[in-house]
Amino acid sequence: MSLSLRAAVTERRVDLEIEVAAGETVALIGPNGAGKSTALALVAGTLRPSSGEVALDGRILSGPRAWVPPHRRRVTTLGQDPVLFPHLTAAGNIRFALRSQGMARSRAREESHRWLDELGIGALAGRRPTQLSGGQAQRVAIARALAADPRLLLLDEPMAALDVDVAPTLREQLRDFLAERTALIVSHDVLDVLTLADRVIVLDQGTVREQGPTAELLARPRTAFAARFAGLNLVSGTWDGSRVALGGGEGLSARCAFVPGTAVLAAFRPAAVRLVEDGGLPRTVQSLAPRGDLVRVQTEDLAADLPPQEVARRHLVPGTAVRLAVAAEDVTAYEA
View 1: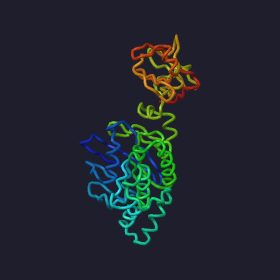
View 2 (view 1 turned 60 degrees about the vertical axis):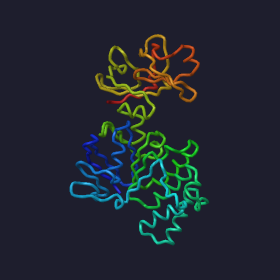
View 3 (view 1 turned 180 degrees about the horizontal axis):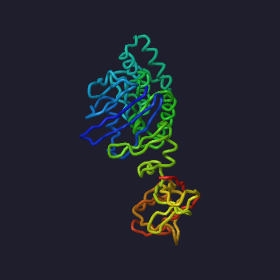
View 4 (view 1 turned 120 degrees about the vertical axis):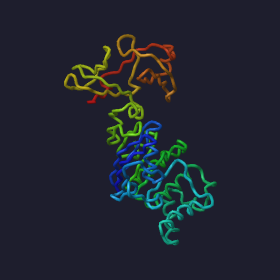
């Protein structure tokens, strides 16, 4: 099923154009207030657009002269809270979804156990939600969502509340189940996006800012948010024939060849940034934070991941003046 969302919500200052092809999983990313939750609400039918329409495989769900209530859309939302019926067992929660679709009682019983087996929790069929761990409950919620055979699956931070030991397994299972399904996912976790999404759409201030295939967009971001999401530094400048000129006499060397005067973007990892005594890009330390076994040194517009020993040796604190450099081979430059 393909999704077409071309709608505005005036009071939220949101005006979106989003397309999802049949069998495609698209991730929506962006800062808080960008319009991600509004997009899901418009598709689910919990919010009416001020103008425009929402269509699923050509059928108008919301529009000036059409409105399909949420329970008739066959659109299922899976969030970070499993929202299981507390009085039903794990199998009973899935049977409820199947029976709601008109499935016969005996077949619903068989299918509920099959789905629990698929998720590796068949032994928990008789347990109620209070007897399940967070990861187990989320598996039941996934089984219930997929068993209902929705025309479209909406995933709203499905891994956000899970332990780091549980999330990878569920992520892999979701990836397998979404292989031939149409889905829209909202996540702040780059691993969710890399694992699950075929394509990424970046929202900001209620509109689409950039979009593209997941690997391509995260490797060559065009907005500051996408760069931060991908864990990259991003600067813009002009190719002067030998480097990316950033203005004010600053520049970055890069292994590329553009026509002089071409507007370019340059992306590079914080781990590729080093401190130098002379030259480089003069900056001022704004903050320091642990980053695994390194320290993230954040300046006005660039980040550097440095060994703790170097941070201590140079006595880096907020307000310290530094000079940053990055090797040409570590810079990815592309046309703006």
